Length: 228
Image 1 (cartoon, rainbow, N blue to C red):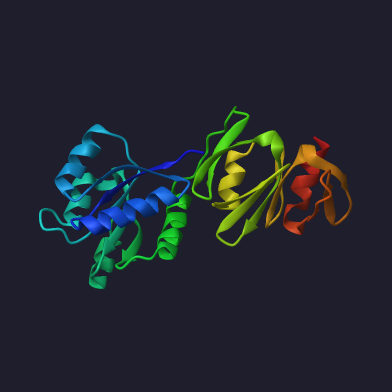
Image 2 (cartoon, helix red, strand yellow; image 1 turned 120 degrees about the vertical axis):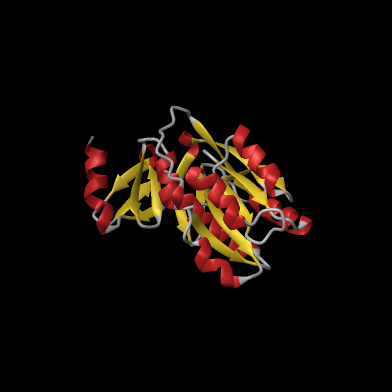
């Protein structure tokens, strides 16, 4: 799984620590740098790769707005502040979201999913596996072991032969990471074509005994893929 390289910039040490801990809980985020000094962040950006900055707007040495004017559209931003009146000004720049302090993790998760949509994964992988983060740990999952993937609100359940993994992700994102041997058959399901036992008009039956509905929106494309 390609991860979004994140920077946290805030003049409050507790805010840096909190946001850094939030970033590390998101499976598709990678915390590459955090600082209380925006000048240090500028220096880091000049020499290193990054994708997304969690940026405090009101900082004494350099405001977040001026920071964005210097860096420009090279990176994307999620703004953080205790002052809601800065929101409109911030959105004039390359800003994905606006987080008002104090920031809860549930609100942070929603912001993370917005960010993920702005960093689509277009590359296909020749690997036989990928890594996901579930229950605070990184897990290697072989594509051949996956039975199906099910959407559960803001999460997905990756069901394998012997286990299941609950991951903060979307079916759309997973669909871009899985090989051609997988197909979307329903708004809530992606399945491994190699695990199909039989198919009727409305359902797919997997070798594990799982019955998965076929959505009308996906039926034609799915049946065409099966024929191929």
